[in-house]
Length: 199
Image 1 (cartoon, rainbow, N blue to C red):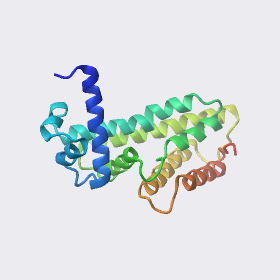
Image 2 (image 1 turned 90 degrees about the vertical axis):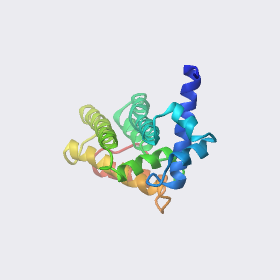
Image 3 (image 1 turned 135 degrees about the vertical axis):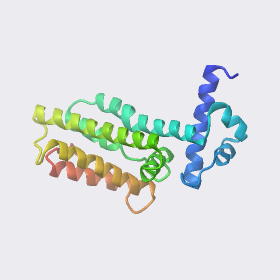
């Protein structure tokens, strides 16, 4: 049996292989064999660490949630002032580019919502975390006088999440919308919503 530290590393490698294979084959067509081939191991070796493909994907989904959820919240918490926190939340919530495999997988899970109760719950949990992060930042901005919102706080927060998700999907799809385009457009919305950000 692998030692705990080795086992953790191997599981991480399997998840990374699943992300790469999913980016190549698509989540709908992904098989355990695809992941094994990408990892350079046998299917049996994968099944030593995970029960099945679904278990691998659940852990990959959890890694994506951590990045957009707790890791982003930690980045935001290190900033001073609501405007800086909002700018950080926007940037950290968008994919780095078309090759961002982890974010691509998160969007594919969104598209496949309704196929698995577990994944449905993960998708909804991530949405709630996104929404609550924006609510907290906006509330802080209003209370400090940094923001003067032009609409209800909850609606403004929902729009930030919607823009983040929509632009992020376009970014990973490799279309005409770039990360810089998305940030510029969301910053414009922030200004229009009364939550102007520093230049």
